[in-house]
Length: 225
Ligand code: CA
Image (cartoon, rainbow, N blue to C red; front, side, top):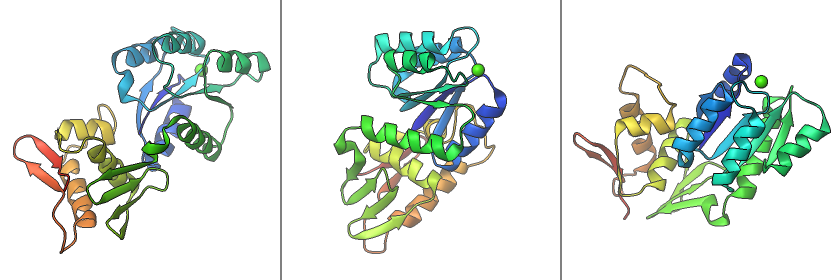
């Protein structure tokens, strides 16, 4: 799951990025409305939800939302607004926001709104990803291999979810890094390989077939049995 944060207040951005990453969401940040509009125009499909501040420079949140809804009616948007006026909230909802949160808000409150919004906008069939004998419950973030329950750390299930959304595809290290960590994140080490090895240890058992194959020079591939 990747969330676009369109917010110009650096303190709020850092609070959101930190909190969302700890919950296993990948994030991208736009500090102006124009930037948010540009990201949503060029890579709309790479986002699962948008947190949209209404008071943005260069292009207001309302304009970003209006433009977005002309192209995509489905991408969930939660409006963040410092304005307590009912009219702004109503306007946002009329324009197609799924929910709104008034600043200041607690992270727990926002997280609950995000989860509720994702739940109400996702198809029932997407609550669970199944590849071969591997199942991932997207809400409880618990994986099952056959009858065995596998508890995953946030980054591990973000990685497993990515593999399970693209079974049999070869995923390059760069793509994994961009989707599971964040744009432009340079860990300066082999963090992808380290996390793939953590994940393999959790999903492979002595009596089961290995599921994540290394494709030399290209990346990794989840095989479906
Ligand atoms: Ca603002």
